Length: 194
Image (cartoon, rainbow, N blue to C red):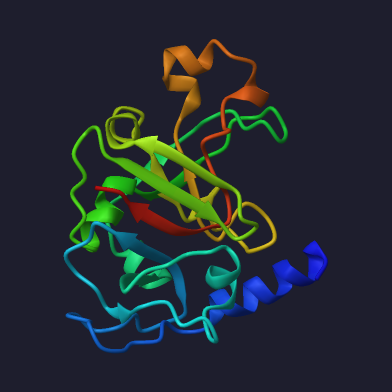
């Protein structure tokens, strides 16, 4: 399957509601799931991976027995932060808004230690792993809005794990094109590692 068809199928798979099943302890997401959290979590609202219905996750070799699924409303209900980094795509500062990534993880009962790692995965399979101490120090957010508008699938959204690289001295010293390698756009999965 070529990449264009895979991404189209991925968009449709991401728009499907989370499939609740055994092992859940909270109500499932009301709207289409945008972000699934797995790993070292203490709360869940959906069951394990279903290879038939979770096609994109299965193709990306995810494995989990339970997960926490968030829709746009759940993410928008969290306290939001606004950052204004200069983006590599046009070399201009933009306003990005969304909840802190640590607060998003907390919705699933994930409270990773500083040395614990968090894997962030995008719909195209791009993945980044950072220690929780770095995600906290750099104030990573799960951006839902760019310049005051919800981010569409097909652009940088609908979710982007990102930080204000202009305000992190060691990253601001780098050329702008080298600042965002740890920031998967079209984010759809977080795994809190123990």
